Length: 355
View 1 (cartoon, rainbow, N blue to C red):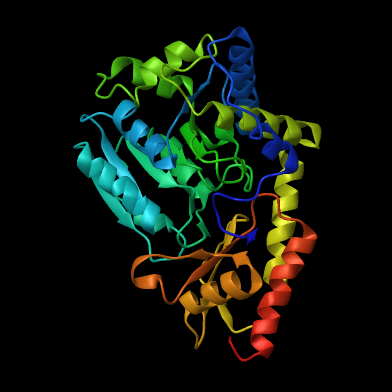
View 2: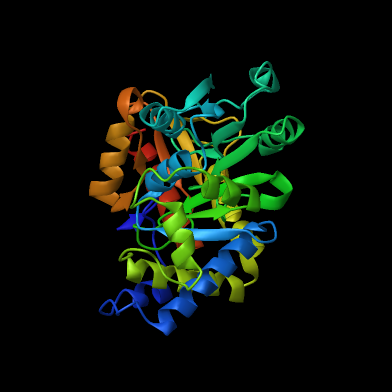
């Protein structure tokens, strides 16, 4: 099966080989060294401010989102939550669960955040945003968000779960206090690890806030991370895969080269479907995924036919959009040949009258 979803995605042979062995014992100096190298490589790729830290949690990306809401924010904050889809709504739900005082800024599905939507919110203290709203494919205008937060001394927390590596992200330039991502997106390894890069400002918040959860505690993760360890048993093999993947990125031209490759995959696909009966959902798509609205045919049926007849996975949408929108991912170990196989399948479906 070819995998064109947005996570988990296809891994390289080198990363797969890491998982082809029994999971080793991890309370060792050797594993600690790997973890310290993981932290350094991640912070370098994010261009994190000096004295930033990175913590690794054995959770999905939602665990990292919740950890930020619990550990960086407090009930003293007034939080802006940008909600343009399923994952923006998840930040809303997390703020509700943890009693955060928040203002929800709703964006139309697939539409860009506008400057006027932030007017009147200058007195807030923090802003939560999914840099790339994976459910719609929209990549938010982070220059707009960054400028607003800097001007008004608002702490910016960025969910880059599906944007990291695929899209331009300079943590220091952006002025982000925290950036989070997950292992199964453009990192292209097995799911199970989320990670959070924390600036000195975010570290200060974590230190001063009362601890409210043991397993998602950033205090404990930071303390153990000083020695290259985690407070509890982590997804060891996934962390080893992350190390291999980061090394491969560094040794093959760095993150800019990997981003360029992903962008090329996305452009080739988008150019290749220009003659097919699809409408683009997002007005400002990420390199990560293309969200499509087929005209006159069920999105569910397209997904089923690709899976059953062409052995290709693409990504469904949930809820009320399940039958009208599907998504094609461009991250992971996708070759030009893989991309062409998907394009050929879609054009063959068109010739058969299935689109």
